[in-house]
Length: 314
Image (tube, rainbow, N blue to C red):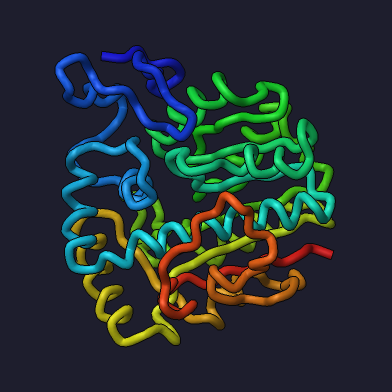
């Protein structure tokens, strides 16, 4: 069993560039680190599996395969969202942003924000990865120790539902200067319902008020990036898929919520949404695509089912 340090498991097996783990000598996967709950599938690890990563366990793969059997398009959807992250980091780095905070960064896989930023401005960009799941934070820390720069990159264990506490942890890391503009990334995180603590009598989603708090915390000149699943304006087959996905995720203990385009736009508040506005992930600044990016096989941009946009605080 791997040891636990400050509540975050440390891995006793090698972590490769994109988070894959080596198998044991018998060919089986290692025992999951302390603090990892395998009684329920994890949204972060399922997403990793869709992207082709290996930081997932059997319970995650079984859940994912049930959906992939019915809806194989989920893999190109996940890939399209990941490539949006790559393009927006390139775009904002070229625009002069030198700090990024990735909220709900999940399991590190298939290219991280700091790697993409360093392609544009080598050695100049700082990145803080934040997640509440121990496995995501542990893998991030392992990767950053091997391939990152401790002065410019950090992985923080925090709850998105506690903006002030999360902000204090980022400040304490010394990696991000919260007095200067940052790129705040909320990529595929807000359609996971942000519910109050289990002992709270309130059950509504906290997403909009949480985003409003983060907007207030951001310094002037910062950018807020959001990608979010929507059930609006999508093909009939995609709508059927979302109904099935919501039922499965809700029943697994990880409830999700799909917002309309107007509701997603409202998350940006008074910030100015930059061109090309809120659009399907494949359509957001396609000129920022890298020659190494593998274009997902989507017949129409709306099949991505994810709207994406970036707004600036002025």
